Structures are given as C-alpha cells and as structure tokens.
Amino acid sequence: MKVKQIKIYQLNWGQLSPIWHPLVVQIETDQGISGYGEAGIAYGTGMLGVTGLIKELGHRIIGKDPLLINQIWQDIYEHTFWAKGGGTIFYSAVSALDIALWDIKGKAAEFPVYQLFGGPIRNTLPAYASHIEYGWGPFSRYVQTPHDFGRLAKRAVKAGYQAIKVDPVDQESHQQYLNHRGLLTNGQLTRAYNRVEAIRRNIGDNIQIIIDCHANLRVESAIQLSKVLAPLNIYYLEEPIPTLSAADYRLIAKKVSIPLAVGEHLTTPKTFLPYIANHYIGVVQPDLGTCGGFSLIQRINSLALANDINLQLHVCGSPIATAAALQFEAVAPNFVFHEQHEITLKDAYRESAKYQMPLKDGSYQLTNRPGIGQELSEQAKDNASSITIK
Image (cartoon, rainbow, N blue to C red; front, side):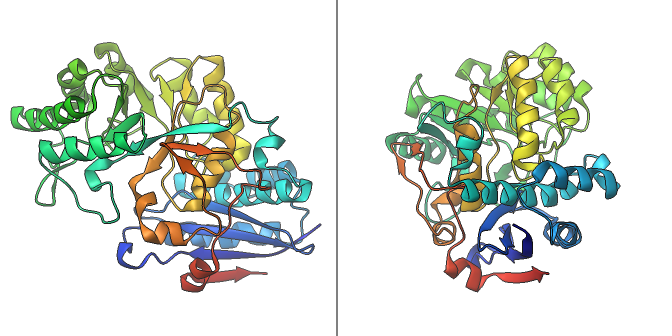
C-alpha cells in the first residue's frame, strides 16, 4: 500500500466562521483506503501556517507505505529540523497526518483504532458539558448573569452530564474581555464567585465543576481566584496561566487546594514531563490534534500513568477530533471525562460528520467502525476550501 495523495480541507462553518475554522486532512492510498485526521487549531490564529506545513510534510509522505507510521515519524523528526522543537503549529500539522495514518491502519486491519491499542477498557465514555457560558445550545451567545450560568448548568445536568466546565472570568460584560492581567479586583473576584456559586446551587453537590481560565491569568491572580472558588468544591482548575514555565505552576500548586490541569498548549512528552513528574497537576489534558497524534499521546499518557495523574483529552474541533479522542479515551486506564464542547451542539458541527456518534445521557457509546470511526460528510467537503497534494 502506498500514499497516493493528501487532501486538506479548511471547513467552512458559515455563520460560525471566521472564529471556527477546523482543518482536516484526508490521506488517500492506492488501495482505496482513506484516513482522516485533524489539526487542533479549529479556533484562534494559525490555520494558514498549519496548512502550509501539512503541504510541506505531505510531500514527504507521498509514495510511502502508510502502515509504517514509526518510520514516517522518524523521517519527519530527523529531517525537518523544526520537529526537534516543541511548537504547537508544527505539531498540529504532524498530529493531523499521524491521526490519519492510524485511521488507515485501523481500516486496513478492519479494526477500530482502540483495538490496535489492546482493546477498550470501557464501552461507555462519560462526557462533561464544556463552556456553558457560550449559551449551551444551537446558537452562541455569551451569558453574563449568575442566573444564566446556573440555568444553563442545570440544562446540561438534566441532559445527563455529570460535570460542567466554565470560564467565569474571561469575559466581564458586553463583549469586554478581561484586561487586568495582574491582581484581580474585588469586583472581578466577586463576579466570578457569584457565577460559579449559581452553578453549584443549581446542580447540587454531586456534579463536578471544572474551571477553565484559558491561560489568561498570572500567578498571583490564579492564586486569588483559586482561594475564592475553593469553598464551592471545584474539581480542577484548567490552565490558569500560560504553560510557558512549569516553575510558575509550582508556585500556584504550593498555595492552592484545587488540583491544576494543563495540556492543550503543550506538544511532545518532554514538554509535559516537568508538570507530571513534579506533580504540579492532577489532570493532564493533551490534545490529539496538537500533541503529535496517537503516536505521542501513548508516550505522554505513560508518563501520567507512572505518576498517578488523570487524563482528560482536550477536544475542541470537528467530529474528526471527537472520534479520534474517543478511540484513545476508551483504552486509557486514567481517563476521567470526554470534553463535549458547546460547538458540538451547532448544526455546522453535526453536518460535518458522515456518521452520527451515539450520545445518551451525557455519555458516548463506542462504535465498531474501523479506524477512528468517522469521516467528513460530502456536504462538509463540498463546502470546504480544499488543497490536494500529489
């Protein structure tokens, strides 16, 4: 089997664009088997850079046996120079290609990818409702009042979700984002507390609350927020500050009782190592679309398992990203929750999937489809901007 060509799809999600711009690759072989993968840059800046990198890396794969994933990886690592750094943009391109290669391997063997990792530990994967502050419904709108935070959390719990994630600080009011990067004011802390308190009051004590700060705080303000929210029984605090320095997380971990979590901005195992080995975090959150795909997630999670750290993959993209994440979450002993981002509630997301993935009472059920178990719909392909590499 040889790689025949690679297609890059820049998905067009209509009214959700340009904020949302998932980037999916399809590797086609000369035996008619295609594999799908996704770069973890469905939001933010970087799509054009990752597209260019996939074009360059794709030419290295054309004509090669897609089943020799380790060999392809070694070639990329040794001969592209920048693979020996840890850049998110570079590894987003590598990740998309890696996921697609594993998809091909699964389809060639007529097995789901999770069977290639030794088989599932679980067939049901509980999800959490991620970012209810964006409306948690078919249309996005940032809510502001504690009443709305509580109301939407209650809606998610009624649908079966056993955990809620929210950023109570980021957007203060009327599209005005947090602009005070040092100490938080009493008003900002009170606003955040009231929003989370409303969630806790509406969902009770048995549902987990996860706080995401989108790496927008600093050491001092992260400590402030953690101490204010601690009485509300927070499950963990996700990326309170940028992950540019593990030493900064050590300062926070020493002073707060809430477990910390990092991962979406990190890439190779060595970038995760100081957080895991020093137990600065309680949960590791790599994104398959940025950390190096299936090939590196195995190594990253081996570090986590050896240090008794839980795993919760960061998932925020198209149905390709969701399907790929479920494959690894099914086999990870330390898996906690699947991230069900609010973008999955939008029509554009659902219309991008060839297969609808079974979700019942806030949990996914594993399917037996080979590979990652998902492909782009023809509608998504037709609406996308595409590039073909031969």
